[in-house]
Image (cartoon, rainbow, N blue to C red; front, side, top):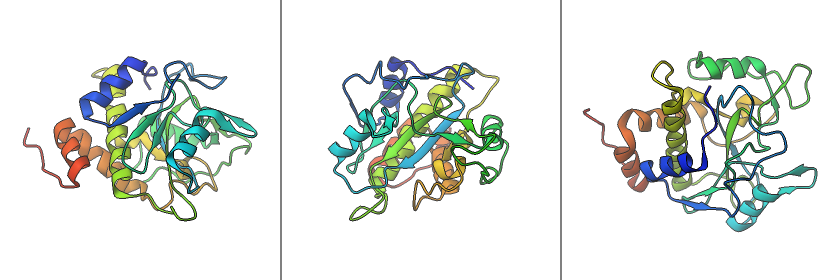
Length: 233
């Protein structure tokens, strides 16, 4: 676990990794009511919005919230044209309650291709809150005329997650190494959730790990072209 990233550290990580991004007004101080866990950040979580709204409508939704759930609903939004909307440096209302067994596996990175299957819904007895433990990405797709993640969205999702994991790894110090196993899907955290739909989280983690292994320059090239060159470092 690591302390949450400061706004300047998020920007520095995105700049270092070449993540195209836009800053949503107020993101530096935006947070939910409960804030980050006192124990720090445990990982990253991927979602989809589950609609076919315009990027601007999705951005507004995850920034302001919806009836019954105030914003922010994610830390980062992923646009159709391959950019990241930075919505909140503070904790966001995105994860809800999940399985403590999954949380433990993520914290220890003690699983193979997939973490243990979640047995907890949001309000299940024994569920633990994840909002203050995970950074959340909402990719703008999931229904109607926009049912699947597009390749550019996927690559910027991966690139930006690698950037955040790399920054958290640097904060945690040399005795703890953060890898792609610190990232899970909402569907792996909370029983009954489908998101991110159409994304194999094992492949998602493999792609994040490739970026972490090969570094910002090659990861940036892959994001732009979809083609990979292996590092010889």
